[in-house]
Amino acid sequence: MKRNEILDKLKEILLSADAGSSAVIDSVTEDTHLLNDLGLSSVNMLYLMIATEEVFQIRFDDVGVGEFPTVGDVVSYIEGKLS
Image (cartoon, rainbow, N blue to C red):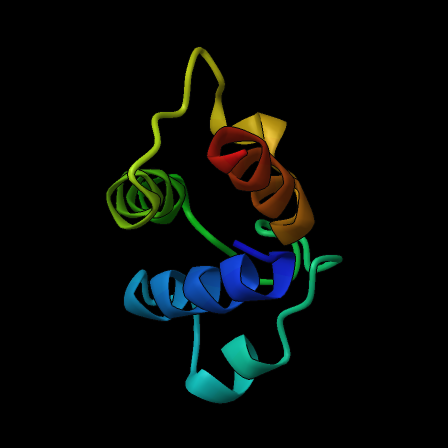
């Protein structure tokens, strides 16, 4: 799966996590900061991790949400797990 495909799926997850309007999600890039730019709460971050595990059929092994400050960090982690 290509990075842009992973990013598109993450945008769908972020929208369902109530991270803002669809216009905000459409502007998300790999440089978007999850907490500062999107204002995700700890509950939103937990939902993001759980939904990401389900959608991509992966597991977050011994990592905390703080290890993923940007969307690109999440994309890189998923990409590594899928390869």
